[in-house]
Amino acid sequence: MSRVNTVIKLGGSCVDELDDRWWDDLAENARRTAVLLVHGWSRPLRSLDPAHGEPGAFLRDRYGNRSRYTTPAVIRDIRAVSGQIRAGIARNLSARGIGVDQIVGSDGLLNTAAGERLWWRDGQLVEIDNLVGPIREVNVERLAHRAADCVIVTPLASDPAGRTVNTDADRAAAALAGATGATDLVLVTDVSHFLVDGKPMTTLTPRLAARHRDGTATGGMRKKLRAATEAIDHGVATVVLGSGTITDLLSGRSGTRITDHRTQGTSV
Image (cartoon, rainbow, N blue to C red; front, side, top):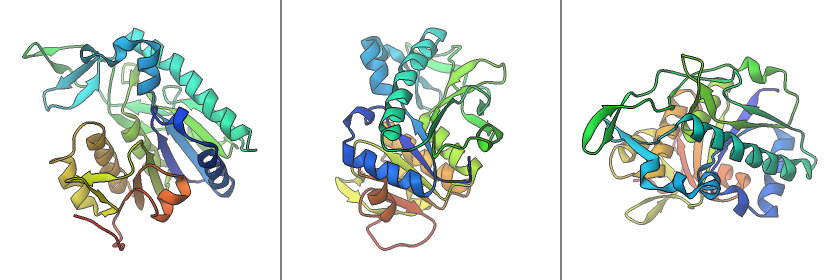
């Protein structure tokens, strides 16, 4: 694969809701420049088994960060739904003449550091073998000889013991963007902007994004802001999060834009 210019993270809740116009636009972008597309799986996983959406399916670490409680059985279910997600994305792009390749991150692309061991359960911190971990290394050589216009990545990874582990898809996309030298990271979600007191933000500086990440933001948006600031730290010029076509998001017509460069718009 030639140099990646754009990394796109597509939320699992978005894949089935995107219309033909959105896919047409993605295909046009992939024709112009190499695209890496990282997908999530939360909604399809819940559809496979509603137990994956119940409170007991999640844990909080000692710092209050929420994570899916991932066992070998959960990894198997993630693999199952991810295969279907990749196939659906590939069909949409192949039908528009885009060459597509696919890779699971645990097949030599993504490696994690050791995962957190202490988690809250019944009001106590206890040691739990939770198969999750933060990305430590991206092996870009696994992408070097792929000739496709778009490579679809499932963000599973390998831990130091060689086990397949779950990792946050937004942060995996940020790590991939930094490692491949991408100029843009686009986090496609089902909300139009990051909101502050109900007001949509069109631009944020990295400093303000970090302040909101550590302050008012919660849940999935907090993770997206964390991924955005990590991407900027890794040298990515621009991160955009929100809903809309890739062209609209990259041009500033939609979404919240986070960049080191001062741009016109609304920030807080």
